[in-house]
Image (cartoon, rainbow over all chains, first blue to last red; front, side, top):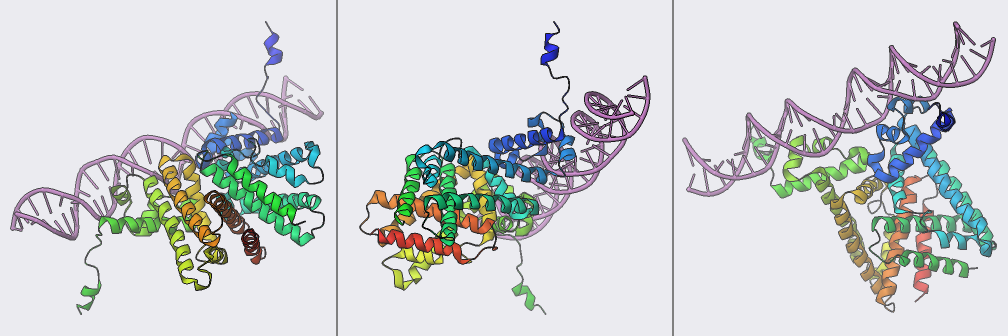
Length: 206
Length: 206
DNA sequence: ACCACTATTGAACGATCGTACAATAGTAAT
DNA sequence: ATTACTATTGTACGATCGTTCAATAGTGGT
């Protein structure tokens, strides 16, 4: 006896940064599980295992928490892509090949994530805090794509790279939307094939 | 006096089909104006100028009304495209050129429409009635795109056309998403340019 | 041991939600 | 005129929503 004392946590109190990130994590879990219905202060706090009032102690409002969650899921996606690029030693000279190859891998883009993104988009249109966060996120991903494309297509100028980045981003988003909404009733390789063909044609322009 | 008697409607009663389409119209208005917050039985009925209870008299539930509204906005988009093609006498042999040219025109794709579509997508993921309607809508638009592409690229086979249709649809959706979410802070012609380049490259494959 | 501070709780508030339902009003047939 | 039918109304119900706030409990410094 007495051993479990050192194993059990003596308290449930966390530092503000820890609690905040825990609430952000619970938000993403709820949104990916229940979509728009998961955006509920009570459900989020229940998921985090804390009481309702704590949300407004660590965040000014629900929408501020949502904005932080938006940044979190975007950064996670961003870093997953960077990790793939760093680990793919075969395509260091053309990292766009790595992006295309892993675009539809399960942990990069699972249909569950669309549940969450649709909520983020919905709020981006109307809520100013979400709009500001969306602009930040979008600019960050756009700049990342430009650097990836710049390495892959060194002979292109800045303007051409920016256009290509918008095109690639739009194509991936659109394919992801179709893929997630239409379920897996179609051949899984169709979307990957389309992306591969885009890559071939783009590299052929060089 | 007495003239206004013939001008005024004697009654507010409408036939079920008329009332149903009026409620559908009110639904689209609310969704395009207020997004997810516009999906409210009370707001929709207020927009239609009828009382709350009437919704459940003409529709089994709110989600059934939403499914009919989903089909309505999709058919409207579909028919707008067909009208453009019929009226564009210069590109009867390559109607895909017409689609690309009008893709970002105001009444084809205004940012307000994204407010509604995001709601439809959100419910498509979870509600079975919406999923069934989405499948119908998607199949119809896909078949339409295939016929348009078939006329424009007669030397392609069925399988190639189907892939091209998915690619075009995804690209347009993705560009539309970016265009609507990022507002008009960027150059308006960027997205049109990308679509034009896609068209040139695709036609060059012939 | 006491104090100031704050993370945490949970009840409470007012608002809104979708739907059900009894009551009313208009219509068409007899 | 009466009857059968139904489109329409508006209230009511129970549930859930986001947020507030007084009360409580744990923490770190003295």
